[in-house]
Image (cartoon, rainbow, N blue to C red; front, side, top):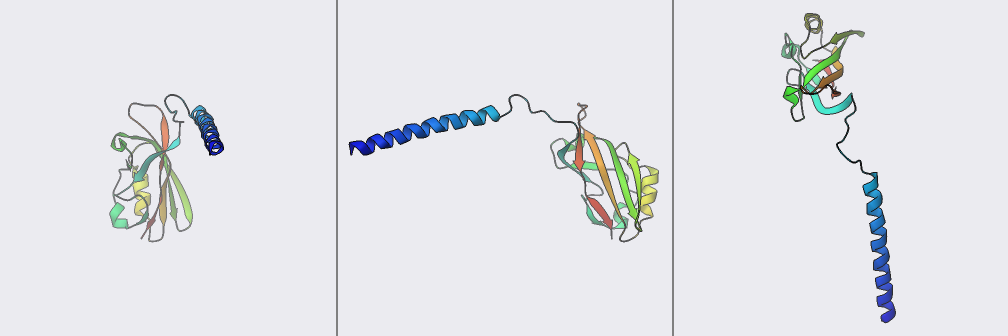
Length: 147
């Protein structure tokens, strides 16, 4: 019985010793201080156009619409869209138009108006920033298909 208790205590001490080193190793691997956000990382927000994040969209739902929004993260309504590329695929031909704000240009609206069922468009490389920061991040976007 005395031998069993000694083995149990030895095992308990060894377990505590290994646990102590394991915790120190884990703590040493953890970053210290404020996390750094690299410029152009993908943020938590996603693009919303005409109330949709992507997928099938009827031409009447987006006709004449010019504003882009970001949703899905705290403070998204204050986020400033810095740049994006609108890629339009009409009849197999791709057209790319640059944008520099949360509004579509008149050329973009005209190109979207000319789309037919089966054509698609996507806002790509969308970059945004917080109003009080110069650091930017990419916004998640999805493809829209005209139905």
